[in-house]
Length: 286
Length: 279
Image 1 (tube, rainbow over the protein chains, first blue to last red):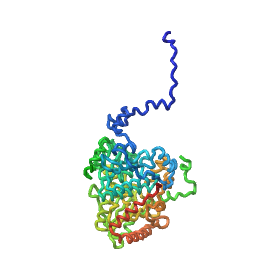
Image 2 (cartoon, rainbow over the protein chains, first blue to last red):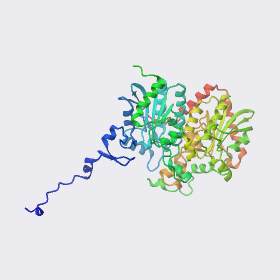
Image 3 (cartoon, chains in turn green, red):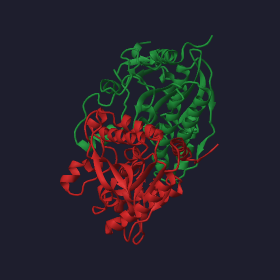
């Protein structure tokens, strides 16, 4: 049979849209830093840091806990839910927004308060969840962090807070604002009790979170390239009506200006904290 | 977005929150130094943070209130264009917050009470302020004000603009004037975020619950100081007289407390704030 008359082999029915995507989705992704294609597995093995350029991907709170703690952890005050003190309504009622966020993130608010061990040493650790309304701080985040501080103080166990947040939560108005004072006052007591507190600033940490607990650590350390500041870059651009310089408000900028103790890449973060706690508290009792 | 959220206020409908925002920013409203002039004798200004510079947006100084020594740290707006520029529209920079903390610690060292006056649209959002650590300056003030071993009285006289105001706001007593506002974000910025239109600030003002009455109801302030007539701008002397009453009463209550009791009382007051959750 001449080749040109060869009957067309029947094409398989193309898989449905969703199915077709499944086959490749998630195996490769593009680095937001160097725009190169990276294998997802390699990225995960490298703690979500681009193996080619060192760009630090944002990670969720649970992944962060898994990276910093030795094994399992205990969580505290999980069931706390905001009661919407302002009865705030924007595009949708705040209550509905909270419900949707709870569904999407499996968390009741924007922080996980945990206790576990870090290289064998017991620590309390609070990690803000950026996916929950931008990691913003309202009454629940304020109370959970304050309780974690009080727990650390009562048991004389070091505290670590990993920030990733847009700041105070607008939908809870002045209630959110006062959480800054509440947490800072609790940190004053932790300071007087001489229990170490290490603040880890990750991309992004801005507004009322930077202007309270994130800048009040015995050590303030940041991941490379994180956006850290008080006013957001867009607000500043609107105020001064000019383009901001390259690298403005990034970790390295803050380090240069004397606002951070260290910029620590993610693969060294656990070890850095561990050594710092060794320095403050002495080696872990065997 | 729900339709109701976008509709302008119905004719005749009064938006009290927005009226108060406008009163709080009224061009004739008395500013910090207008109160200082009327309430205190022998006011001597103290300048500079001894680190970088002197910020005219915060005025600090020693004074006497009815014969009693008192330290003042106050956010100051300007009235005419020249003054407004000089005071940076009342937006402090890190050196302003550090100056305020320095003088408050100085007062506490000698057991002198402290009065802070809040009146700012917010901390200055500029490149230089960020470079010098605006966030760190505010954060340090929050923690260190909690530690002060002398009475701290805070009065929000106009605009309590977010963290920039709160950085002088950790007191044993916190009061607001009747038409003052205190908010986590300006109504304009809030409207820009939620309605994508800064012109809907009126609506945002109501949603943010930023009036003295709202804050009192939420348990975030200790009291409201009444204003004369249509507002403090109509009669500065009468407004100052009302502040005088409150200040005298607060000082009488706080003076007998020991340094430890003062620190404890201040801590517990803020510790209770924001009890809006279920477990």
